[in-house]
Length: 170
Image (cartoon, rainbow, N blue to C red; front, side, top):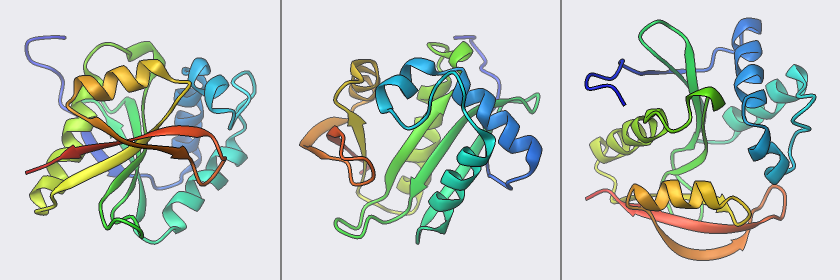
C-alpha cells in the first residue's frame, strides 16, 4: 500500500445507467465470490438484475448502497449497509466489495474503516456482518480487522450457511 493512499469517498448510488455499468464491471471482476455466493452467473452478470437487487437494498428500511470512489473518480468498491437490524438494533454490512483488480491493496481495509468510523461517530457500540462459510478469504479478511465470530446460521435471503461476525466500536 502506498505511504499516502489515495483518498476514498463514499456516496449513495444514484442509479444512473453509468453507475450501474460500473457496478456490473466491479461485480464481474470478482467471479470467485459470485461462484461461491450463487447469486449471479459470474460469466453473465446482467445490469437489470443488479439494478433490481440494489433497488431492493435501498427499499429496505434503513438500507443504503454506497459507492466508493478514489481521488480520480474511479469506482473502487461498493458497500451495502443496514443502519439498524430489526432483531439486534445494530448496523450491519450486507456487502463490501472492491474491484477485483485492486484486491490486497488496502482498499477493502480502508472501506471497512470508513464504515466503522461512521457508526462509531453515531455513538453505536458495535457492528455486524455475515460471511459465507464457503468464503475463507473473506473470513480471514474480517478476522484480520478485529471482527470475531458470534454465531453460525443460514442467511435469510438465500439460505446459505454463514458465519455471523461482530466488531465492537467503543
